[in-house]
Length: 438
Image (cartoon, rainbow, N blue to C red):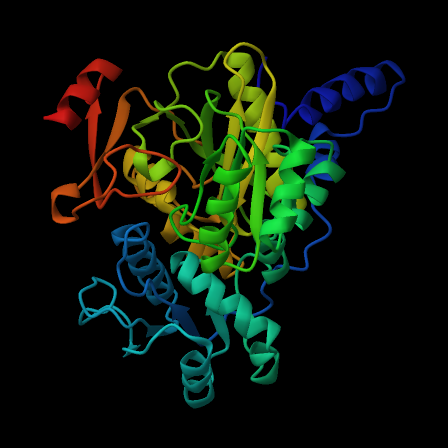
């Protein structure tokens, strides 16, 4: 059990030994170069853009808070280093990214397609970054792409191709693409009405989990043990979204996440893996998260790591990506729950836990710079292509503010209620856990 992404190096070694026996003295360096050479590369930026529009984090709400302000601020810093003019659109004045000295130009406008189009019309940026503003910014970008606004004004989408983002958000397409590379998604079906949801549940078998697609913080989701419960859930979820996902319940399985980074030249590393103390069924934003994972065996860790790299390569993500798994605690059976081809809440935690600035690196990669060219900002010596190894433990505990809201259930579940979180670092889990609670 070990990393499988560079198994080809061992093949080169065997090939060299065989060649030597046949009196073929081809230099090893040439064979290595030929093996590791990456050909297909549509996502490489030919020339650096002069002006880039960043879709910001928007208003704060439960499920989306300071972590997207953090990622946007990092992106602005990265672009300024490359002498690129930055234009930011963000209606929230109480953020770091809108403060003086950050972006060259700030528009305090709502993150809706009509307003963003007006900014594009007046500013005429060369490129746009969609993945730094959380789900709100992403949804807005997808709408603009579908309306043909970006192609109309000749704006290039930097970083992850827009199709990859749409494919990871649309559950049906997502499960088909994952199945195509031989991986498994949790058994689920998409529904567009309450009746379709009930039919899907009959096929999957109760208990099921219902959740709205394209939604923030697990809005309108929950578990249903029978038809009546599902009918109620489906009605609520369809009020938030046009598509409803009905999943087979995997309650009690472990929930594990990996943060993966890939550049336009197909260099791929996993920056951090995290494990939720709470089992599947509790929203990530509601549960205690530990990095690095504490209960995975070496075999399980590498099995999930290899899968993460295969998936991110299949989708062609350029930048940062978060992949979540459900892992059976009694066997090595696992399912991919979802892939976020954007910076997420977990990315902010992973950045702070490892010291690897994911948002900053993702912005640089979107410009077509490769991982080996970037310096690791912590060590200042190694390149960004090194995977951080932690000799400490990080624990994140959410914070709730339920006394402000009357009649709110105090039970945690699949919908996010926490309003913030704390992070603690310690030499071992017990120490970090107690620090965080204190």
